Length: 286
Image (cartoon, rainbow, N blue to C red):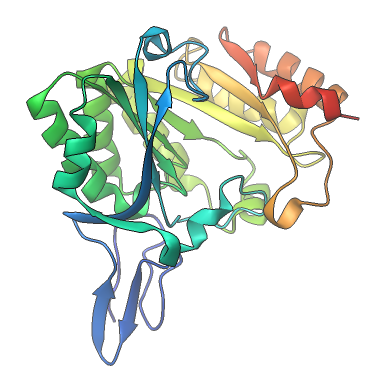
């Protein structure tokens, strides 16, 4: 039996991996990507960009652009996915490392943000590409991920952020294991482990967000996440993101105002740097 070891899923290939990037056919293992080839969509965003860390990241104060690298494929299957088009891997562009390096060499590009989907299924490419860019020029390297990748690779990625002044943003979707399983289809043990390990090695790069899914991710859930973060440091930035209906939860409302207020108060009990993201959505909130 063939197994992939890039993330916590450890997919066995009797058919297709959860990320849809690898499959087993006629006794052979096939991959749509490699350490030198990826399926993604890259574009430049003017700074300050809509990055979840823009409220504290020094990169948002620079003049220029952010190279946003959207990776197709994900190791979670979130009911509320805000970027669910990552599942359409057949619509992504196949690019080489050198093509991506060339995009990042433009003087106006001040930072690279790896997101998706989530970078984990293509993390080896992302690390190699980022490392090569850093070898040639100064640039900030940032990651927005679910955090359930292989620990040694997560640490290598975090080291690049450490060296370049970038950030590593974990999307801590839930603390409760049953709730995390319901919302994402996967457990969160590897996520929490990687958060702790990166804090041990590179504490200054860490930040976290939580999407306030109406009636699911309530103040009790947020307080437990905040306690976990504060057990490492109460200075770690934490952003609560207001939910908008999408994907399998498109019939829900925007996060109710009362829920936002209660969750913010719960997080502030334990953390000094708490932020509310997507505030514009409050205009549509019940």
